[in-house]
Length: 346
Image (cartoon, rainbow, N blue to C red; front, top):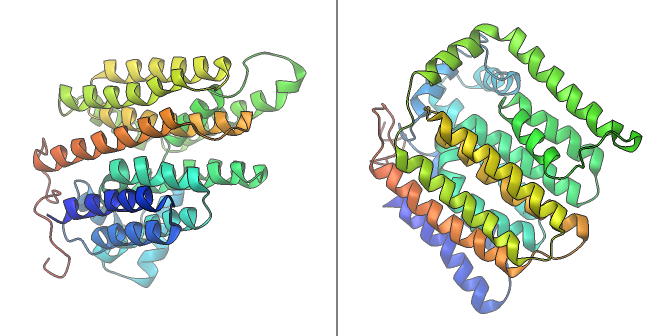
């Protein structure tokens, strides 16, 4: 099966890296490129692919979608009048962002992407939840710019993610909570101002797209989570990632903040028991390693082995969970992950 071939390529990369003691960017880019081809040339494959094709066929009308995503869809529609091609262009864009990230990555960022992000999220982000995928790929770019000391550019890219998926406001709030002291000293005024502007932005989006948000809210609330396993498995992945923190030299203040807020949000999202619960837990799991890496950069220490082991194990377990999801998709869709076929066969 082609999905298994993609995962095998990822772990073949790690086998070569282990024996050669070298993380090759070129080889990593090649692996991501091959996975990208799987996503770009797919037919009616990927749970929400059919939904996005329908939206792309109506690109001339704004239906309350995130403005950045809608604008790109509209621009693509001016060049191509085939919604199938338009949706595949987003898979291409997602792949190119990851390639750009890899090209400028250090060994730790490369490891984060190849050990955790790619095996756990690549298929889902490029073939299913496309808006979330683009937004989180951009968030990785913002994280990379912050590591390179380009803070203004990092902030600009980080806030641009909201225009591709509204849930990124939570992502930015979470990353702020896990790294900024909550006090009212004048030196922290800028941080509270940023938070205040983020809240105002969220309110503005809700007011402008009131009908869209009400529709989504009513749609998600009445639909239960696909299965109890889907939520529990994601909780387990989160706890694997967090448990590695207790074997590191990260300052206790950062440890308690990352663990405390992560566990809090995971419990809240799991207790909702609605259709989007697995996706909310996925978002927290994606953010945890970014928060951990930011803590290391703050103390100017290299990422330690326990954290890397946690990422590798979570990525491997997550890939197994994604494969299980492909085999047993819990609701009908006109574009399931299996059987895979290309759009030439469509």
